[in-house]
Image 1 (spheres, one colour):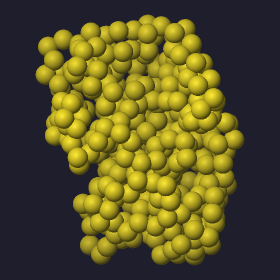
Image 2 (cartoon, rainbow, N blue to C red; image 1 turned 30 degrees about the vertical axis):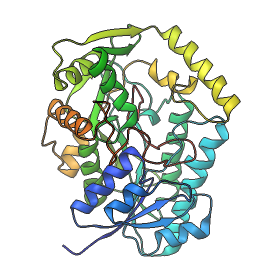
Image 3 (cartoon, helix red, strand yellow; image 1 turned 90 degrees about the horizontal axis):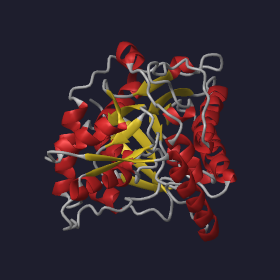
Image 4 (cartoon, helix red, strand yellow; image 1 turned 135 degrees about the vertical axis):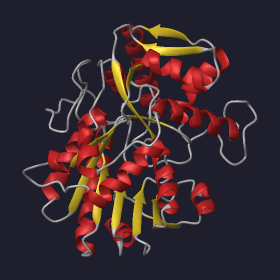
Length: 367
């Protein structure tokens, strides 16, 4: 195939670096859009073109989108000290990117990476479909829903599709690594609350493959039909958080994993304290009160039938096997044995936004 030119925003985050690798493996010419303060060492080793740009700087965005055929927009604020940060990055920044792509004039395909959090929690027995009524519970989820609605406003001038990832795990995931490390070292898996909640999950390799498929074959959002160009991305399996812990324990070779529930009031207290610390430090903590809203909201499940039926996407490997592959990667890179590899440290690869690593996989971080 001829090399297709693609731009990835947020390429130094967990999902971003995996998407860059997936695109390169398929022969695409990848441009990675980074901020001036980003750590680009991993991207440099991959040999991709790197361009410095800021979602708040229209001139730099014009240079980034020039002559691109597909734009994958992953850069986002996943947590913030001030609510205004969500608007500045997830809305104003996204609007600036769309305007730059429209002004460029080559009619690129834009894939917006949104979130299951944009729709809100599901019920245990009824996973969300794309046409579900959105009821996000966190400020992050509300900002992602607002970004979807913004995409619809500009969809008459730009070819846009939306993907909504569920919980994402896999290589390079620092937050998910905490789950694997705790089970590996202590045999303990921490569960949020006592209620029986179910979750949709996806491995980052499958998510990246789905994103590429949506870019190639996905319907476009329209001003009157946002859901028509929107796709949930989730594996066939749904599970409780306890079942996820046991699956990871089996992948690690553990004969038994002890599930340790943390009551919702404790999580809310920790979230409130972390929010206070974040305000004092001027730097958002991971498990802040906004994140706790998602963590304690109940089940987070979604269907993948539209992705399969319209895009023809299939999952080649079970999620359990994907967890085995993830364990192998963590061990190879030294993340689980204490001997940290110089190739890949268990620390953020980079920041997809001023406040976080963009749409990221959880320790109960709903994407």
